[in-house]
Image: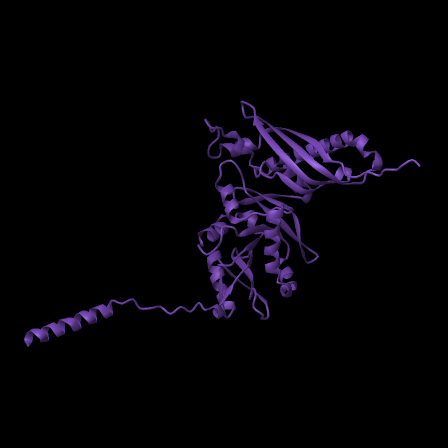
Length: 363
């Protein structure tokens, strides 16, 4: 009997210990009704050197949309403080686009970009852009239009179509950590309370050093070795619109790496022409090609000089110094070389199709 009693007590103690070792369930309070996933962030510096984050909530629900913002010494702290200004928890798992104020970009973006990179809930395809002007006022006037969703879909569309340059978190960091190139971002301005695509913001490491106009942006795309298709290409000096332009860029360095030859071949369809040739365009297309080539070469030289002054190799020319057997530049040596390079740029223009000209029949 004593044996059975001891066995019973032992069994009860084991059950007691096992019960004490069970994992207590932490209640999950992240119900869908209690969270507000953000789609868009606008980040700017404040006068007291803080970082201010602005977002729109709720993103989709049929409630009155509003803008909330907060500031802190760090980006993470500012994002956490957003919850104090709203009755739902702001989540970054659906963050798709971040607009960064130009003044903050000039100070350097590494801390901001690194914060997004280290957050496992944020996609590497997060779109980044630089903006100049009163972005908060623009967001306030477009709240009812679901402007955050619209801007994301617009950038997603342009990424595939190539009409407007886009850049995401992955490619920005890839260029930033590369020894042979610098990053760039699309540049927007607030004009008449409208968000206007205005060109490209170019960087030296993580700091914005200059911006390119829309005209310069088109030349940038023609020179960039990885951009090979241009759906619409305006040539302003000749009042010409080129369609479906395909480019092949070849880059060669001299043995001393003091000179670089850039050769760009273009094949294009003539979409529109307003310079008086009309029906005799077939007889004069060779002169037309020469005019386009001369115009592009001059504009390309001016663009490269501007990038050298900004100390930004966002074209990635440095990648072509590497071969299978040697890497002549390491560390910051390519940065030092970039600003003193001599460029020889040549364009070769050919028309695949001159369009339809007016014909008359003799009766």
